[in-house]
Length: 144
Picture 1 (cartoon, one colour):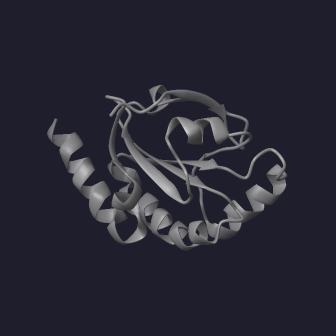
Picture 2: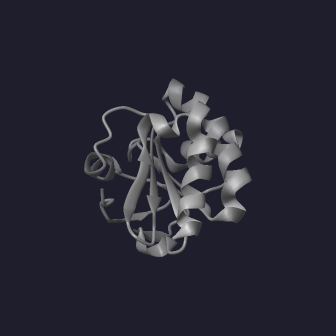
């Protein structure tokens, strides 16, 4: 399945065009929110994956569903506390979530930015399977 494209602004006021801006990489789109307990439980696995696979071609792009009603400062503080150094789409990201069929969070989608294809999603990317799924997808990308 081809990943829906989008243009959005990050917390650092950078405009990202997805997936074009991430050529050559696998991108983990991580849909989450500060108020989401299960999201907090998944964050350590995402942090570990970012640290382990970042030099191998993985990029994490967070999509916070906190919405424009949650001050940017509160989201930034949460991100610092959780040690989430990757970029975060911030603002009204509900349209992006809708494009990706996100009905509950946390939810993750792994996209090959070169082809625009979704290579894994949902339970395949839950904390217990996250590292092995990313490893498998990175190997497949290198083989092509």
